Image (cartoon, rainbow, N blue to C red):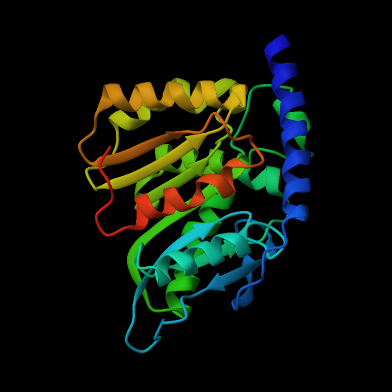
Length: 276
């Protein structure tokens, strides 16, 4: 119980710090498209922001797609889109479309079920990750493929609770994306359920190639489980999983996304990513 209470307190502290940081940075809003999509899985309309590279030609080009929660204009969409734009112009990564999903009930959508009573106190409703994943798979991805010229390659990026969703998706439904990027994933959720069961999930992995990049800051309740995940991946050594862990002890939970995003995206989206 002592650990659980500590974890809950840290969750609230990190949440408010993260919100303050997002307000502090004034990223230029890139040119983008916005549309609303009615979701039967979620029972609500969702606002979707889409950024495409300046060089994109809708007639002749088909591009891979990166999806992200926390994808509102007042959330992480602008700084990720601007980073992609810069790296594409520098020819460090291949051109990629960014699709941002604006939050409504963030903690509901990005958390899986939990048996820990203190976890349930972070929001009126939690544990909606399955429905949110179904929304992305069944409703959003087909809509993006209909509206834009896309290849079959797609990935997902997220930080903190969104990083938890990225990792959960990687382990539970690995074929949903080709690559996964998670910054400071909240792997403590549900008494670190994903870490405790990672070996079993990986044993059932498909044979298709997957890429995983993840990082942890100095946040103790996060870094300890991220490093446990590293040990599991080292032991399992699946040849079709290319992965890289970036230990960032000099970064805090509220700084790691911006500090490590370029190295994460370059490793993941370069034509020939560095092997672990």
